Length: 473
Ligand code: FAD
Image 1 (tube, rainbow, N blue to C red):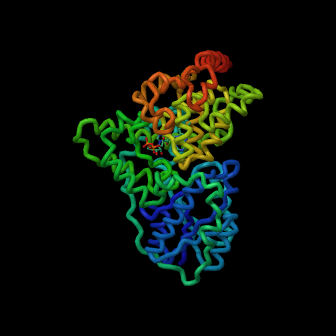
Image 2 (cartoon, rainbow, N blue to C red):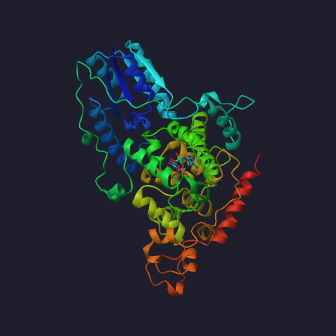
Image 3 (cartoon, rainbow, N blue to C red):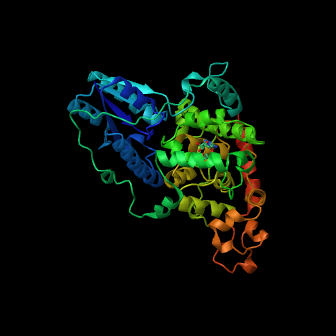
């Protein structure tokens, strides 16, 4: 028969179980992408994500052409479109790889039912995660809420992993073709073109993902454990957007890490550390799956609306933070890196998030929304976990009394100021005091603003507010 393979966030031909099974079981295969952002409400993909998606679909389309096939691009609603494609082409099977966020889960079960009613066979596969979220519970039969406990069990389980699947190089096209829309008709590239520079930093698509991974293994893996917290060093994988769009799978990464020989000194720590970071990604998706309300609400229900700063000034404070004009160099450098590259180093994400949610007391959702629109790796599970963890209202034993001091963080993790100087060129000849604390009134010669808040004072107020919450029943 003929199969539809419905591509979603699995834009690749290697290690793609839905595609492999379709090719193995059906005579001809129709690869389809359906654009239906409204089905992801309230988290419609942001502008940076859309830029990436455009490029990634274009890369996938090229690879499929090489394999003798064609990517059919269509617009939603997904169910209507899939039914139409099936009835026009005579397809009898529908294959996809599962996603775990609440909106997609609900949508996909409707589709399974709707297609079933039309007599189609639906087959879904696991490949976005290493561990199916339903299969892991603690002794009480409830979901884990602490990373270390989760990862201990998950890692054990991963000892028995099957190898990643080989690439699909040849696809036979269906007898009756279905017309594709041009990619440009999805209007994924916003008019403002602020993402102009992204292209110099990224190569979206499966080939770009593997190139990035190989470069990392060759240049950076041995330094990962020691250097991953230093934002000026480029020793993290930068695979987050590739992983989000499924251009490379966690299994491909984990498999390689497990089979890297750990002869060189320091390598085993780096292997463990990177595996654990992939574990955090698993944990974030696991948490969102089991606690879907956390996509818009704090996990800790004591953090009600009233907890957050709603003062008349808070709008302007938020905007200064977004523009990278807080007057705190490490924070502003991070916000500039985000704006110019669509990505920010993890250490700096924690610093800027702590300033917004703790020192300024602004709701984590405001920060999450800004990240959502500007990150090329915007990912509902990882973003939600990252923001709530930093704000101290999420899962895990994140100590709520931890308010990052940006100056101390800069001193420790950007000691020579290389990161700050990269993103704030006005600091190119600044001394270390200025790099850490910002400009002082006397020598504020340049346009760089004075710090918008008193770090010590706001820290004290924050601790009092969080203390009040944490002692509530
Ligand atoms: P590496 O250090 O090379 O790690 C490899 C992979 O592991 C990453 O690509 C990512 O998929 C996963 N990973 C690493 N750290 C984490 C983590 N703490 N939580 C979950 N997964 C992790 N990550 C996103 O992918 N999308 C987001 O929208 C996102 N928002 C965040 C918001 C905040 C406030 C914070 C503190 C963190 C956020 N993160 C997010 C997690 C983390 O910052 C990025 O995954 C990481 O910086 C990506 O860079 P990398 O690929 O070089 O990471």
